Amino acid sequence: MRRAVGVRATFGDYINAPAIKALIINKSDLRGNKQEEVGWGKASELDQLCTCEDNEVTVLYKGYLDPRRWMRFPIPEPSGGFVSMTRVRATFCLFPDTDPDDAINYTRAGVNIVFRPNTRGHPGYQNGKARQLHKSKTFFSPSQDFPDEASLRSGGHKWEPVLSAERRFQPSTLNRPVFDVEHQSRWRGKPAARRSDIPYGMVITVTCEKDHELYNKIVRAYSGTLEVLQPQIEIPAYT
Image (tube, rainbow, N blue to C red; front, side, top):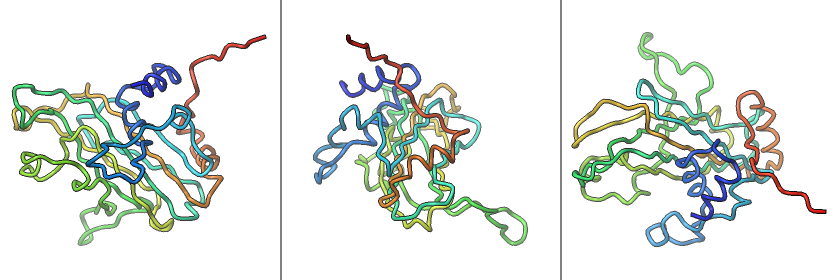
């Protein structure tokens, strides 16, 4: 809670509650322990939450789920591509409405997240007619969650309000990677109309182990797209 208050005080109203939660989880450290024993791990210090190392960049997406279409979240990459082994850690957090009268179908909204490591170029055609989608790859594995019996019966983990995972990639396998997110909604276990007022936050940290100019490269490459978060607090001057 102290870390969350510190982040909010640093960045003000610009960052919403789901994004703060996603940021803290995304930068937590298991310290070699099993997730079943320590949850998301130990929260980082405030300065680590609010800054990036030279060889890493953290991007934050926030807003409300779009009930009409898939939402695409690009993973930033430098103009010349990645130059060494790359770690991608991503956390998606949403604050769905709940149904206290239905313990099995407690959360009323969820998401289906598809990771596509390569979206450069036309995906091609199938049988010369139908357009194919860029190939997907597993990122948020259901085995990393803690599914109960009802979740196992439903065959997925899309109703979990927090999804977090980390993967390592060869630089050649990442080419304009993205996460595609689809909004799901239910009421008493049945499909329901999707709503547009469900807040979310998504935090993606990319670390290129041997590229100590990664942060500067990303800032230059996305100068007109991504906005650098600036502290909203003033440090008083003492004389």
